Length: 346
Image (cartoon, rainbow, N blue to C red):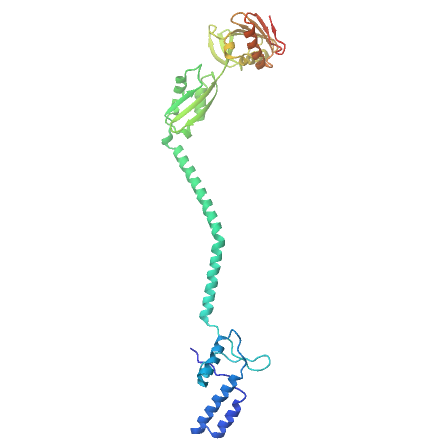
């Protein structure tokens, strides 16, 4: 520890020094001189202004001087140089700040700053952790699903055909046998389309993967509207003119189409739409369809009843009216529904 600095000299010290000088510096005179100096320092200390409230070191020094005598006052003086007040008088020494206190204050400030930073960033950290955890979970599920879908664990072992009535489902399954063993996600759609093209009766189809091992094929068959007579025999066609089959004899249950202009004419288009709008039980009773244009479609039933239909417009409404008329007059030979609001029964 540094030795405390001596108290500032008082105005009375020159007098003490003169007395000491008068008595000499050796023997008894030197001892008397030392006593005079101490007494002068004590008197000067009593006349000093009161220390500031925060100057704990000076307070302790003053009290120790009063209680312990002049020697205690001299030994407890603060380790600092005296300073002068604005009025020119000498004041008390300021409080000496220790380096350990400065270090402790800086450390406390750093700890408080770190605590504030943690408090303000904790919520954002939790939000980021939640976000990245959710993204990672979704990515893991998607990756696992993709790996499983393209693995042999989900290979095709069974082909199911739904909606086939005019064609044998077993034949369709045989045509798609090359898809057995392929993963459901890797079923070759172009190969399936090429295989089903061999069946003209199939108008459209849809593939359904049924994990773990089933491939379903839903087909929609074309609706035959009749048979067109040609040099090769009779060709069964649908409303679009697609030839479904050809036989040398008139096929059973298929009406003969007597259409002017062939399957590419407007008359054939109107006749085809009329046949598709009929209920299935009534369509099965039609034996002949005659049309010279798109406005004069005429049907003949198996009992000889003639039905004047007209154009294909409002065909659904005309079919509903015709069903009620036949039920109300089963013995009638002619039904005119070309104007559904004013039907005629003959």
